[in-house]
Every structure is written in C-alpha cells, then in structure tokens.
Amino acid sequence: MHTGEDTANYLAKGYRVIAFEANHALVKANRARFSSEIASGRLTIVEGAIVAREEGREGVVTFFRHPNATVWGTVAANWAERKCKRGELIVETKVPTVDFPSELHRHGIPYYLKIDIEGRDIYCLSALRETAGLPSYLSMEAGVGGQDWSYVHRHLRLLKEVGYDRFLLVKQFKVTTLREPISTRQGRYGGWNFAQGDTGMFGTDLAGQWHGYRTTYFLYLVHFYSYRWLGYNTDMKRNFLQKVIRRVIYKTFNIMMPGWLDTHATTAGHIEAIRRRSAGN
Image (tube, rainbow, N blue to C red; front, side):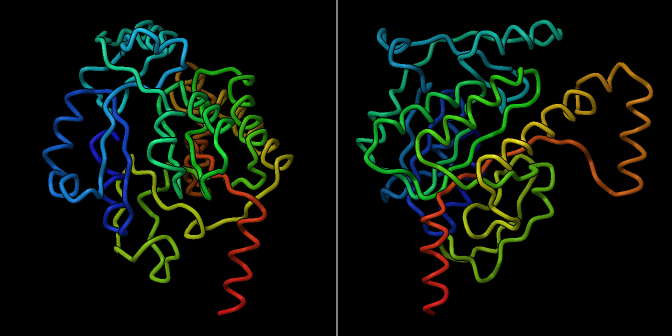
C-alpha cells in the first residue's frame, strides 16, 4: 500500500480495495487518511508481511525497512544485505505475518491484483495455484536491478504456469506522462494525474500490444541485460563510456533507458471477451 498512492486512484475509480502493508507507521497514516473509506467498507487494510506458510508459523517475521525511504521495505534478508553493503542504514523490526492464500479465500479473487513486495512477489503468484480462478488482470514489478536472470525468469514462468498467457511490459519511468483515457473501461473516469512512483493504469486502459509468452520472454531478456550494462546504479556508475552512451541515447531519442518495468498479465480468453463485447456495442 505504501502511502496510498494507488489506493487513492482505485477508490476514485469506484473500486473496493484490499490493501496490504507491513510498515506499521504507514498503516497508521493510511488509516487516518482513508478513515471514511474504511468506515464505509470500500477499503480494507491488512497489516503485516506476506510470507511463505513455513515462515508464518510463529505469526511474526523480521521486516527490514529503510528509515529515509519508505518505499523500500522487505522480508528478504538478501535484499537488506545488498542495501547495507552500499552503506545504507537498514532497521529491523518484527511485524505480523500474512498468509496470502487465506486472504484470497476471505476476500475473494480480485478483478485486478497489483503485486510489489520487494523480493517476495513469488509468494503472491504461488498463492494463485490454490485458487479456483484468476484475477482478470495482474501486474507486478519486473525485478531487474541486482537479481540474476533465473530470478526474473522464474516470475515469468510462474505467471504462465498459473494460467496467464498474454503479457504487456510497461516502462514505469514514463508513468508521469500517462493520461487516463476518458473512455476508460476500468472503473469510472477520474482524470487522475499520475506521479512518479504510482503504478499507473491497468487492463484495457494500457497502451501497447499484449504479447504471448515467447515474445515476452525475449523482451524480458533484452531488458534484463541492457539494465545490467546501462541501468541505473549498475556498471554505468563506474564506466565513463557507458555514461556517455546513456547521455547520447537520451539526447538523441529522448529515451531514458532502461528504467524499471511492470509486467502486466491477462489471458487471451479475457482479451477476446472484451473484443466481442466491444464489437457488440
């Protein structure tokens, strides 16, 4: 949930929202900010960290947070270790655990599932193996900074295994340039102005082409290795030639590359159903 950026957008579009957050200070702030929506039943906040069932047996887990960057928090010790090696201060706290399959059973399968839990997105994807249906749309951060290819590939493969077969990669650094279409099919039109850090649009409001698994795999691969060489906080920080290449690309094509991605997923069947309804209208 973080500070409620996406929550505010989804509520404005008329959706009922179930939001998850492990950082108690953020939960407290969000409960105050969205008190009326909580009281009306339009918003439910689940406090705690989503973990694998074997990690949740004691009911609490170690949570690593950055005191000056609330956007970053994780139960992944290796992610915290990487931050520490960069000289950043990481604070350890104990937080309640959340069993995501149980939450899906309690609240129902969502129309849209947004996943971004810093290194443990796989827990949410795995939970979909236990459900009778899938969210019509799903999106998750495509981990590329600091991970090896097997980490990235595992997420895409699992999306395929649970039943998704159409994918769209969205460059998140462009989110501030996006404009919600007046003819939106995702809830009601709110004229939302997206800020850096927002997820942005989803579903049929997204521009771009949905691809099958093989094409998406290739696009993932290209992006992953271009990030390794040219991405933020990678080798370009230590190599003058790469800094020059990045600057030339930006000045020539007005492209910041290769920023981080969100991977959106749906099914060919759902896309076809939307097409038929549109044709009928």
